[in-house]
Length: 267
Picture (cartoon, rainbow, N blue to C red):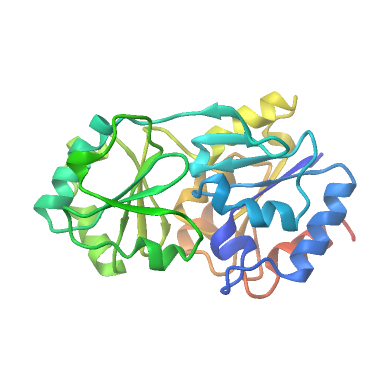
């Protein structure tokens, strides 16, 4: 029995205007009121997700959000942390040197803000993300020695395609590397995924993947789509993501989430 619905944000639950449609909002609220957990699963930090949490009224004692592609599980009512997996500043040395050598941009995120590295070429992450995150310009050498969540490389699609081809094994063996959007490549702790965070949350709520339905569209959604009892790809997803999903719904501008849920739950 499905008791949890996990939802990617960009190009899945959110439309092209970065909004949750009325149809998606109303459908999820009805299911949530019926006792089904609704969990937003995103690469963003909680402060960049909070307006959507509030819009969906996911503020009860058993409401959680998966942030940083599984790296942090947050309890919504008090924003306490159920689980967190981090990287140190030294963990980014390899990818920073690669970005310097190949004239590529890099942003590094802690668990609240983005450090826009000014010793590298300018990043497009702020414009592509279009989210109210705080961006702090800083040279890599000046980054404080603390815990970080991930690094982001934001560039044109062809440039990122080539960068991924050029990555040496030393780097590909050191990070979990995913494309969360065509113009965004993420460098995460090894073996990190949304499924990792969901497994922790499911166990905490005394559930398992047999109780999970997940919606997604991108490479960073594939682990949770595979792990879920029902993994649903959006019609705007790539053919590779559709191939691993159990089903496909309409695209993110056609209320694909709401349409599928209405059909599945006979609403």
